Image (cartoon, rainbow, N blue to C red):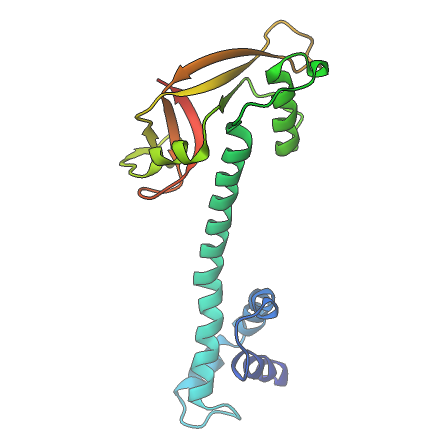
Length: 209
């Protein structure tokens, strides 16, 4: 085992609690230690390893693996779900309904300019649903979600209540460089994607009923 590897192990174990530096250094540290994994295992089983005892070696390796294999994926998953929930609230809920200036030439043209800006994309979605109801009323639909939509790889449900909404549909006869929308007001039940099976929150709208 090289001196650099020993120093890395001591740094990971002695007097360090989880921190930003620890998290950022975990992947790099594991890569550096992989080449010495066999030697580390033998040292951990030896009553007195070379300058590092078994009591110090095993917790250090366990701590590194724990950060990489448990906290890392869980943290990424939690962040992606929170982003999906926030995107639903900002792009699919408009309550109370906003009045866009005349320069936008209609509600949906103003709204879709905002949606495309949030998505940071020049792509013009063919259809977009906007609900004109409070978030607290909508999220109740995902309280108990027993269905799983395989096409979307997410849990899904049909809302018990109907909600007022605007359907923004892309105009078919327009120049390819344009992105103009027609607006249709409606009141319907929603097919929603939910963040998990129970006590979930909406993350998408896949249709109307």
